Length: 195
Image (cartoon, rainbow, N blue to C red; front, side, top):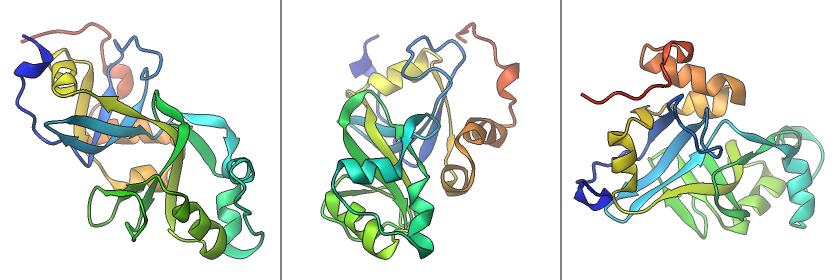
């Protein structure tokens, strides 16, 4: 079987939980939020791998002044995340509410992924959108690739919950997603089996 033999079933607005047997260092012990999944492939953002710098530093690097005071201060110390190995020099903002931006992929009526500068400017000026996760890079799959990886037991999937992305610290997100399945991560074997 090849990657093109699988019929796509959309996993948009789902979490991908990397199995312990995942050997790719980009995805080992990751929780990925799937933003788009169709016949052309899939796109997601890893939501539990913070980088060594914060949004305040990122805003300085892209020359968007982040005002001090009030609700704008909540952005300053938020971590920037490694969103995946594709386009790591480009920023992506996973956010709610979805809002209206120049370059946005609407995932649900509540959550969207934006890659245009206007969202950063809004964050710096108005403190909106309320909930954000900013990443450098994203995870991408060619047509049928994600389905093939699922058939190889590389991932578990579960419907996503926004409170896990936006309401928990990064280290708590993977265990919380596992709990949605009723599984403790430490109970998983690193040996893949096939039925």
